[in-house]
Image (cartoon, rainbow, N blue to C red; front, side):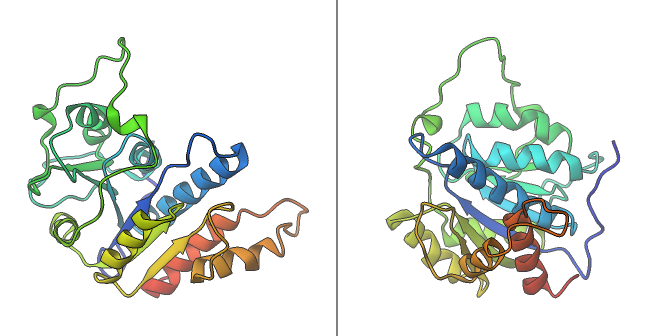
Length: 245
């Protein structure tokens, strides 16, 4: 299947995503909207020929990896320092063999660059593919609301691996101290920070939240079908931040 990935316009760029998986006790519609927001943001960036950077987890990163497959260019001789993959997944803590095995197919297809805690790109031949005939319950999936935080060091690794500046950052579905911590760190790296709130998280008055309310007022399009607000929001954010249409 040909790649949908565009040529990097006016130079490549990276977008940092800090996405919190929906809690298990959340409403089904809230979980669906949460997934829609993540997918829409990924597509908006991948279609520009740019890169999404996310911390490794067992929920959000694999979802983005599946979307990135549609935009991946089959790998040739890949640099061990820089990557052209549409998605960069970074290990924030200790080596996670389960996650590495989980991303093995995506690395092989050129859709994911997996970066270890020391900032090195993980080579495909160093990963043991997961045997899916046994039950796996890694701790990171036990509580999907928790994960490692972004740090200035991790943000610098994004710049080094992608070989481009961070154009902006988006926090999806997070509330409380963890989201506040990420907001403080990410705002120090870029002036373009959006908090994309899923209904039920909080009302909020961020730029993204105002865009969501703007679309909610006209949820039905010209054909009488319900609009997809997160697709619109994601495209608007990337277009506004990059100046690219």
